[in-house]
Image 1 (cartoon, rainbow over the protein chains, first blue to last red):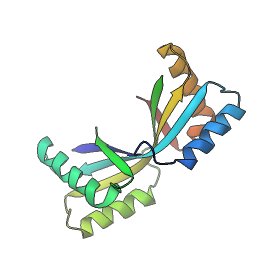
Image 2 (image 1 turned 90 degrees about the horizontal axis):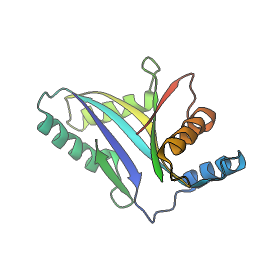
Image 3 (image 1 turned 30 degrees about the horizontal axis):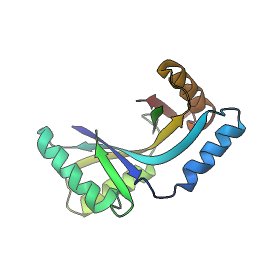
Image 4 (image 1 turned 30 degrees about the vertical axis):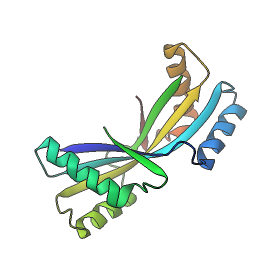
Length: 77
Length: 77
């Protein structure tokens, strides 16, 4: 089955890439864009038919590899 | 209001970064991970209270800046 994960910076952690996008958008005429925060998205295809077990594996994968929990949060969707 | 966007590579487009993550996970003992595809996630805070209008603006933003529609798809969530 496929499990989708979003990894985002914790609020309070500076996001210069998101800031650059926001400033570019303002410059392009999208004046009403107040903030942009960029994160990562992962589509994981795992050979496990039990949804609960698959999500538990992905949670472990996030903690061990995909997310740096000091500065990032992850969400399995 | 906040609008969330996911930008992913179209199926068929090679994703070496996702492949590297998959191989790393296999090496870490997650043998049942068959494929990983990486994408981008954006959290856009737009000064527009009408949800329909906000989403239309974000769609334009995706087409003009965030996604390369030759190789990428975007989804407003």
